[in-house]
Length: 89
Image 1 (cartoon, rainbow, N blue to C red):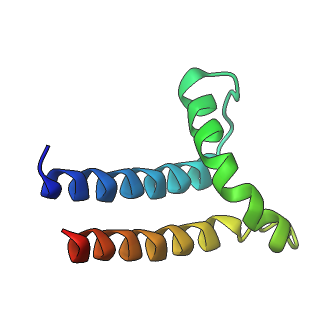
Image 2 (cartoon, helix red, strand yellow):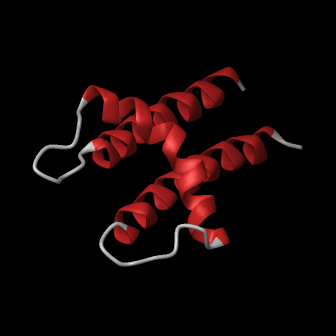
């Protein structure tokens, strides 16, 4: 596996996580079955990422800002890791 493939894989993983968080935000506006496998997968993957941010900034007035902070943090982390991989290799 080439280094560019590794960098693309890391980049894609972060992008998928961001899209799963966006999907979770959209799901919060519609009625859904939490036991449906796709919905359960989205919640199972995104909850460990969003929970620490929810502890830092609890929902206020029914609005949860943790997805915004999580997406910003993931984007920042993605940039750092990808740049480091390019610098190392």
